[in-house]
Length: 61
Length: 255
Length: 264
Ligand SMILES: Cc1cc2nc3c(=O)[nH]c(=O)nc-3n(C[C@H](O)[C@H](O)[C@H](O)COP(=O)(O)OP(=O)(O)OC[C@H]3O[C@@H](n4cnc5c(N)ncnc54)[C@H](O)[C@@H]3O)c2cc1C
Image 1: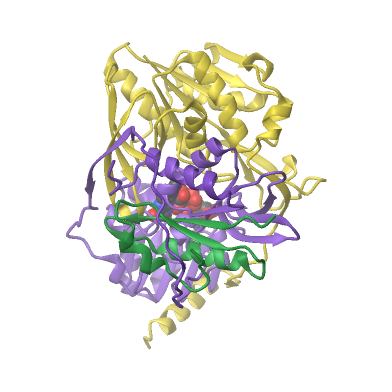
Image 2: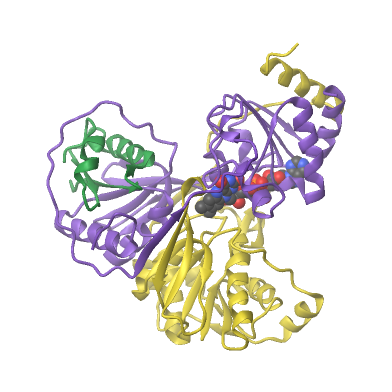
């Protein structure tokens, strides 16, 4: 079983929530030395605004 | 349907469609008010395993294992998810440290399914800025919790705080009862005391939501009659005892 | 018109406790029971709507719990409402939120309420999962962490306040029927009168088993949210405890406070 780790981040009033970055950190820790990949999903009308902010080292997609 | 603000129907449909397309092993969400309002529904509708307010998560062999706190933070519970292809976890805030390092992941677009939302955003209402103090700027605080017992008792702690030169704060039940203004409430749905250096907590059990606003304070002093209260796990100094008796004695030192 | 209010008897651990033989929960001998604090608010919210509607709305408390959980129903009925429902089956002992949600969904199917008010969370296990899971099982719209409700019988939509982080409030509307999870502070829960407590003893409580609801223990177990591996007392930080008489403790505290704030 090598399913990926999907992270659903959140934003409010145009800002990404700090907890979102913590959740990405949890994903990176969980990934550890497994060969799973991490995908971060931004659900938004204009997701582009948030993409740079969630592009952290260790995130694959 | 624009999704400028949170709508559970739209979010649920989007995550379920992603899960259907990608078959993830785990879906992680922050444990926040919005996800309280949709992560469990994603799990239920998708037939996924689910654990909320997770403080640790790891693989033990091939098994996904999550840890969460129960019974007023006094115990931990370790859970796994046999035979679940996908598991939904919501992650407690202030536990995992965000990475600073940026990366350059691939970016792809995924069209969210058309969903008729059955909730509608009307407006946001900012918390009232009463003319009272701004506790987020206070350096020294004394907060009272439900242990204060009755409204009449609040005043003596206000006086004690004044004599110490400390700002009076409170836990949620005190603000909900209207014994102190909401602007004095410390915690997740109140204020974070970002500048605080010394925090004296009297008759406060130490719920996650309260700690969200003060856990970072370098010197926490807790006074509680329950030796097992979780506030003692983050305090530097503690007194197991009655807050009224201690307050009575303390008064003599600061008059 | 009807509002169904799921309420729960929660467990509180004693200061000293032991774990169950299987290590997966606290030994019940070391657990006290209490009514869940959030449910005082959800029940009050329903009673307020009932009273404003002047006889047009019925409020029904329901609990999933063993015999002694009947107390939480009586406690509600002492404040108002004419009857309660209790669902129990030994297969529900370690039920996860998903299982409770499936049970409640069957109760909803039988009772056909217009609204369901659950507490936002229950303070023993703090999942904050049951209400929204119930809505998902029913396919109903839902709003979590509600601190204001504007709804009259017959309204197709309810206008609500949702409490977000930092005290921010969002006003939203939701189509009915809906499940709302109710947050602390939405109202000031009443106390029962002595007369109410007495009357509540006479009010009927229907008792249903899983079979009465067309469910089986095996089916619920298969849909469990998770499986408990173990429970344990965590290694945690520990405050330096100040010992002595109250006077000595206060003197030491005063010294610490003075030192920390840099005073003489
Ligand atoms: C979405 C959400 C947001 C929330 N936001 C907040 C928030 O922002 N801030 C917040 O505080 N809470 C918040 N809460 C509520 C939180 O879950 C707790 O209910 C609350 O923090 C409990 O307050 P407390 O510690 O004062 O009361 P309790 O948990 O009842 O604790 C009272 C303590 O006082 C002690 N005590 C009693 N008498 C005495 C005495 N004479 N001397 C010494 N000790 C005594 C008891 O041993 C006990 O430990 C939130 C909850 C939710 C679900």
